[in-house]
Length: 179
Image (cartoon, rainbow, N blue to C red; front, top):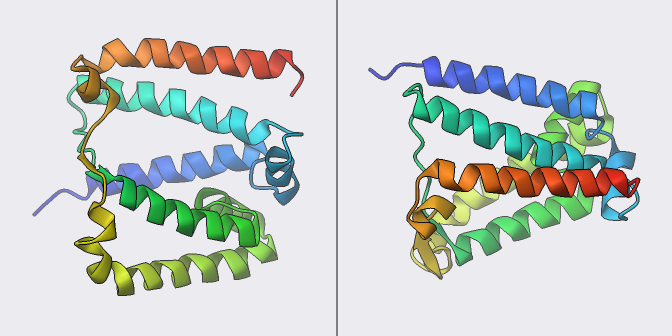
């Protein structure tokens, strides 16, 4: 029997991430709309900070042997379908799945009713059509479980510092511009 400890860790980190999303203000509709209108870059700053933190944290845990990373295979077709579903939900409600959960925690009715319904409806719809898509459009432009280190044939840590530096530089420039 597999250990449920990874699930417990995932749940704990999910709660922490949701808490930080809420504290960062990105569960507020006005902040998200401000990002889309390129007037308030809070969402971009929080998400880029999360990318750097998660990238370093996950790969540090991997290097210490605490976790195994198993990237899932991808394709341009999967990205297109996922982008369409994500974009449709985002356009209709103004939230992404992570911010829906945080906004529900804040008690926002639009996220609780519309967001939860959208997540359940979208998941059900994908489950219903997935068997028909699996051998067709989802395999278009298949690129396997490619990652940047695998693409460049280097160790993970050869990519993480320069990528982190680029992201931190972008964050600095956004902040310096007063965005």
